[in-house]
Length: 94
Image: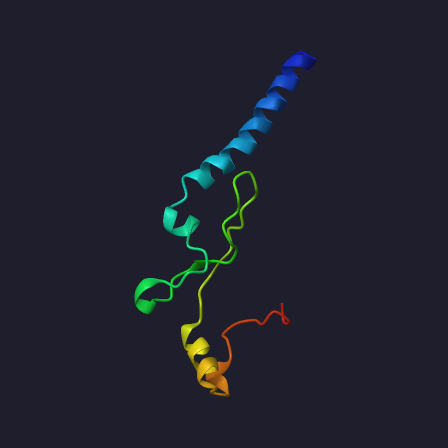
C-alpha cells in the first residue's frame, strides 16, 4: 500500500469517527434532547438535562439528573433534618 493509500484510509477513519457521534445526536429522542430544566407534567420525577441546549455548531452536554422533589419540598417548607438532605454525594464530596 502506498503512502497516499494510507493517508486515504486514515482520512476515511477520521471522517467516520467524527460523523457517527453527529448522527447519533441527531437521532436522539426529542424528549431527551430538549428537556432543559423545565418541570415535567404531573410532578413525576423524570430525568432532566443538566445543561442548557447548545447552539448549532457547539458541543452538547449529555448529562442527565433526577430531581429530588421531596427534598425540594422539605427545603421550601423549612424542614430540617434527614428530609431536607439530598440522597447521594454532595458537590463537596465529589
